[in-house]
Length: 285
Image (cartoon, rainbow, N blue to C red; front, side, top):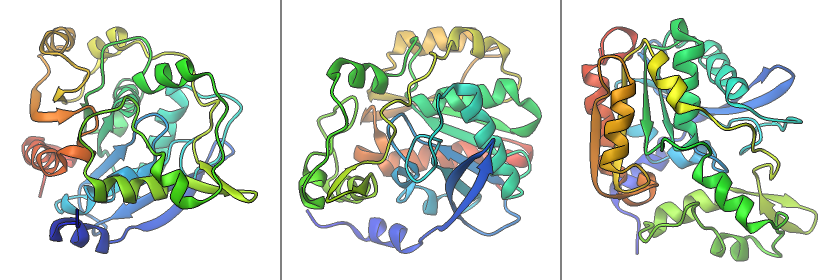
């Protein structure tokens, strides 16, 4: 299946790659858009990386968009241990390095938990937060899958073999092949004579307590619920009941847990709409 024109155009709008040191660890990030526009920070899920947003971020033209590799992921450095508070400080530091003011922060899955932590722990540093299919559970689904495997990170002889083995966690039925190919190649690094995944297999830290975070939010917030994802309608209602003033829920029809892989244009439409309605530094200008 050949890549459509919109996808090729998005990748052609290549980001700048930068690094900032946060508490002794280099944090890598990508940036798109003109300086001076409202800020938007995109946060990937567990075991993922900033390249998951390569075909999404360039389409969010109203904003200066940053996507970071959380420590232990992608091209960022590793730490002895990881937790949501540290990752939240990395988000704030990257936003400050790019002079984004108080940006909107949007996170997918585990990254949604990080976004919520930013909203609660650093309320003055963020205009609004949104989460994409981040479930109200004690541990992210990516971690549970990897814990179940109980296998060391594997090394593959060739890049092509490794790309073929790429899977999402949790798995889903539909993965657009051109998106999968691009993301998989960006997920790998050379190790000796072979290739292995970039994420630190020791990256899992204490669980996020969403039931405690949601009632403490003071900034605008929203939930993107994927129809075939991990957040049921009942769970979405429970999450909304925990947020003072309610939590707007944007439904993504026929989307799996990873909408960047199966319904990226629907996700772009939803994010654009949300950004247009949020006020202040988080609203489109």
